[in-house]
Image (cartoon, rainbow over all chains, first blue to last red; front, side, top):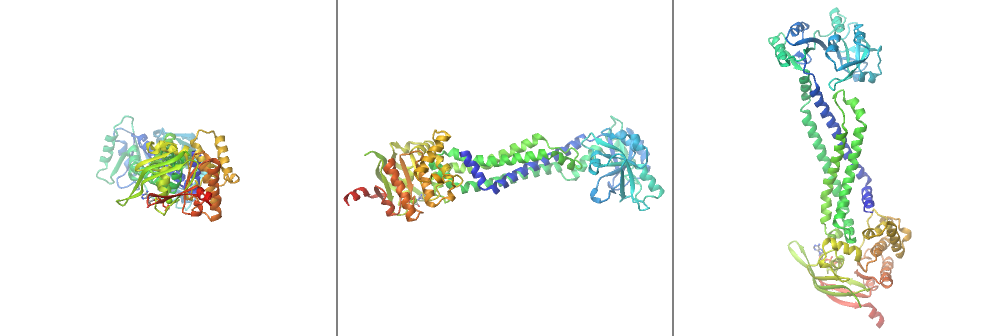
Length: 388
Length: 235
Ligand SMILES: Nc1ncnc2c1ncn2[C@@H]1O[C@H](COP(=O)(O)OP(=O)(O)OP(=O)(O)O)[C@@H](O)[C@H]1O
Ligand SMILES: [Mg+2]
């Protein structure tokens, strides 16, 4: 029956119990997400290619480079291919439907991205018409698009002069074999955009956002970077070259020192929860001082009474930890499809969820220890003198 | 007559704000077994302190407290807890019961410390509740009971383990006259029929009238001892 007593004490204040369990569950759940984000970002950096260089304007990512830069970049030793890469920024029906679109040189781009696999349609299908495009698996799932469907896009950066919409036809669907590359993007022919601009059917800036410069295997990336940057050192526009890995890293550090931030948030959450639980248990112990006096008078040992309080704290925290861990694992799939657009490697690990659970048991033990020790030391006479 | 409780030159002092307060001062007292004692005295005279010493809830500073042949001063904290579980039953003034447990579960509590099976515990608790006339209320929580019923459940708990000594600190302090009388009647019956030694602290002369002997305490020292039976015999 001490267990019955334990259980009844917990249920005596159901709201308080639920809040405690809920806060621990939330903490464990958040920790799992933080860890998954952290790992995802880390994996993205570790996995990123070091043989693909991103050559862009030294001013900003949003300033284009003249098309004429291409031959000189191609002439740099070690360079295998240069792929033109342009951000399109079109709107599908409503801005809230945002997804990325890029104009690329289809064949060269495909050849240099072995991580991307066309699971429906072939490169030849894509190349069959200028208006063809390919889309990622997640994007297809999101809008229920299939090969052959038309995707009308409003040109925000590149409006059509006739006021109409851009009309792309889906010729293929790709899947990504790398945590770095998302499955939510539309790729179309850069040439189609360029022609439009040239013929006056389209308005907008002329140029190339990024020259994706692909090196021969084993080529010296830093030498190539230095050579490319040197070529345009004195203008007309200076360029900046970075490996795709470095680009990913910079993008991540641009968000602030994310890993440190995540670790900080994680420990902050734990700290806050620890005090919340401690406070609850202290409150519970205080209002039970009289009960403790009675139990001691009846002959229950100091140890068993302390154990009762300790178990109560551990029970609440363990329940919370279990709920949080279960929730995290069960929602992994749903979270992934949402988070992978920002953090491609996002995935909640089972052993992290289990560590979260273990951590909540430890928090329960630590938070329960203080009131338990207090009640253990409390003289029965003193406990009995306290008013209930 | 067998001696149940011996108080030998017991002194107890409390420290309060750097000042030491001598609550019991070389107290000498012998109590017979199977006798119902009332302990009276002004507030602060050390009644509760004495009861706690006899019940092994506290240690004397000096002197000896011997209950049922056991010198309580020789027992360690853990041994004392076990001794309490086996040898004494307590009834306090108000808030005797654990609020989250039913009447039967409250009575079963001390039985958890005895080597009994679940069904034995249950049966024994029900027997004790029957004795105090509350078997039909055994599923009730304390807040669903009246003050008098609560005290009777507390008495049932005190006798559940069948201890020789029952210690009651103002058990009727919160009760009205009629309810108090029924509780006192119950204690008297336990003494007469089950031969329990009872030590009951009270401020109420009428309550003291239910006892065999009335011990008066004054400023930590023994005053006179009235023998109600002798008085009744003379009358
Ligand atoms: N833990 C303690 N610390 C300090 N002083 C205490 C402590 N316990 C009791 N006292 C003091 O010892 C004295 C005797 O207390 P005790 O409770 O034994 O008196 P009492 O006769 O039961 O009084 P009452 O009739 O009011 O219950 C009181 O003055 C009380 O304030
Ligand atoms: Mg008192």
